[in-house]
Image (cartoon, rainbow, N blue to C red; front, side, top):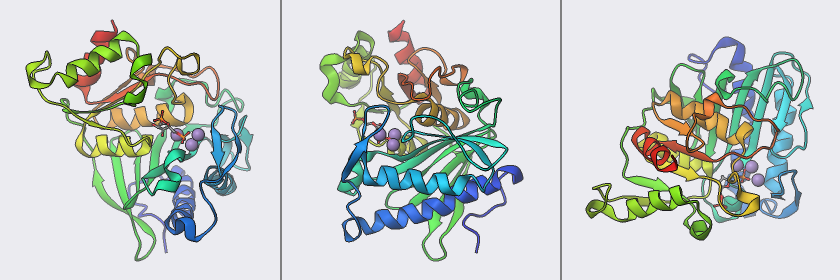
Length: 312
Ligand code: AHG
Ligand code: MN
Ligand code: MN
Ligand code: MN
């Protein structure tokens, strides 16, 4: 029984996508049992970026690492590994956030796995420290009320849902499209006192509603799982901001270029949205370090442009 309907997936990448799906099915089963199994949210260590690692972060990382070498992955870059691992494959360099939304593990809120694929380059680091526009595939698995896969190979987007009846990811939508205008924004408003002026202005204008300079009312959302925010924006629109702020540890925000921002930017642009660091398109930029953070503003084109105008 296949783990995904293969028809729309490029043949050379099919083994990689199948390995991601097969592992995703196992991770989804572990998540679904939650506290009936082992303690998924227990703290077990700290990663290179300074995040506390939860048990599920490490379990997911180990499972994906094991599955991807035989599927053709040569270089494996993970949030949970200090440096790039060389696996048994030959063709691909794959970056992964094995478990996105760690703070939501124990609260039964959507979490996910984010991945980005390049052709394997001259060496481990060089394979990832290159323009985001050189990605050949990117996407995420979402572990939510439904388990789903959203992926791009550079010609639009594909959305699959895992059918629990036969544990196969089935295609439900092609060509996702983010409307250019939006009335919903996402930001961690708990950090308001640290925000730079352009972010403060953006939010104040939105909060002013239809009597303010934007002339419309906005709703506000924050899940604290990038995968879930991206899924909502791909499904019904909106804009997301996680920029730099005044705290030294947040000078470039919280999200990491290689395995969070670049893959989501690829998906968003393939769905007609925009993805920037507040100014420049993410896809025109390269990381200079594996775990480098970067300010991230993405979603509805008009909103992203408006933020860029305020940024100046
Ligand atoms: P991760 O769990 O992979 O470290 O990523 C967490 C990220 C992302 O999912 C989310 O957008 C953001 O952290 C939430 O940040 P706050 O805790 O500042 O809200
Ligand atoms: Mn983390
Ligand atoms: Mn993450
Ligand atoms: Mn993570």
